[in-house]
Each structure stands twice: as C-alpha cells, then as structure tokens.
Amino acid sequence: MPSSTITLTAADGVKSSAYVAEPSGTPKGAIVVLQEIFGVNSHIRGVADGYAAAGYLAVAPSTFDRVERDIQLGYAANDMTEGMRLKGAVEALPAPGVLQDIQAAVDYAAKAGKVGIVGYCWGGLLVWRSAEQVRGLSAAVAYYGGGMTVGSEPSRRPAVPTMAHFGDQDAHISVESVKALEQAHPEVEVHLYAANHGFNCDQRGSWNAGAAATALERSLYHFGKYVG
Image 1 (cartoon, rainbow, N blue to C red):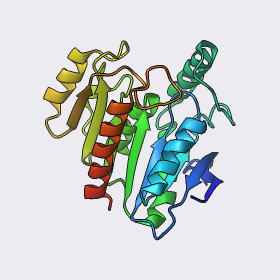
Image 2: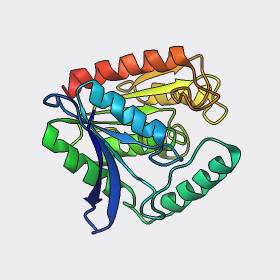
Image 3: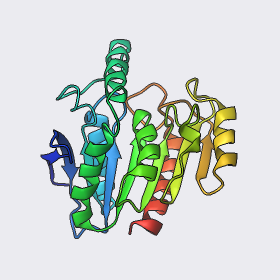
Image 4: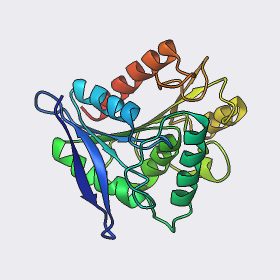
C-alpha cells in the first residue's frame, strides 16, 4: 500500500501531520484512524495500512501536534507516563481543541467518498466526541474509549451509526459503566469481549488475537454498510 505523511490545516490555522495509506484501487470510501496516547506509532500506522488493504483511503492524524510534534511512543511504563502527560495537555486545550484537527482529517479524507472514523483508547474517546460534533462523518467505531462511559460523556448524542468495543477485564473501564452506556444508547452497537484494555494492539501484553479479529470483522462490516 502506498503511504505518505501529509500536513493538515485546521480551521484556526494550526497545522498538524497525518499518516495516509492508500488502497491499491479506487477507494470505496475513507477511514480516519485516531491514535492511542502513544502517537501515530508503528501500530497505528499498521492499523491504517490494514484499512487501506481493505479498500479505504486511511488517514491517521497526529492528535498530539497541537501540544508537541513528532510523538511516537512504545508501550513501556515510561511511554505510558509520557502519553498520559501529552493527553492531559491536549484535553486541557480550550474547546473545540483537537476536534479541529480531526475535522481537517475528515475534510481531507472526503475526497475518497464517505468517511468513517475509528479510534483506540484515547482515540476511542475522541471518536465518541467526533460522532456528535465533527461534520462529514458517515459512521464511527470506538475501541475501549477511556472516559466515554463516565462523567458527562455518556450524555453525548452521536449523529452517525456508532459501534463500540470494550473488554470485560479492562481495569480502566468498568463493565457496569459499559452496560449503563449501552442502556442509555440503544442506538449504539456495543460489544463486550473477554479481553483487557488494548486488546487490539499486537505490541501490547494485553493483545487478544481472537477478540481483535472479531472486533475488526464487526468494524469492517459496520463501515461496509455505512461508508462503502
């Protein structure tokens, strides 16, 4: 799959980078891929490549660029600490903050047709917010979105068909809060796996090949139905 790094310009003029993976033929649509707290690292680029292999134009914007550029972290304890610091800095930005960079990615991706969005961990939370607030989306999929089941987040109303994947062994997201989200949002397709937080990432100890494969199959079906 041909890939490149592009520069996106948000409505407020802030520039950010994005990794772009292109399908071999005419794209059947586009998928915006939102990073974890570890940056657009080799794992997230691999996820984007996978969506390109499935026939989509995949765009993975660097959602840390507003606070610090060129961030690519691993999954060790010190990487986790650094990622949490950067996430905190982005979350502290005045609204709409990073949603402007996600909007710029969606606007760019729209040249390929309809646009879906998928995100992991912090990216899952950003997908949940994007499903309500970002224009031009046709579908959304959140993986273990940390924070989306607590506080004021469950009161959001997604404007597009949304799917959410969670692990029942996730120490960061309680099963009770997932069930409450599901009850509050009968329109959202919620899936719970016998897995831990980060089960989709084959670079983490919490990787669960079976859960990852099933979640991807469901996500591709969702995007096939609503994006193309």
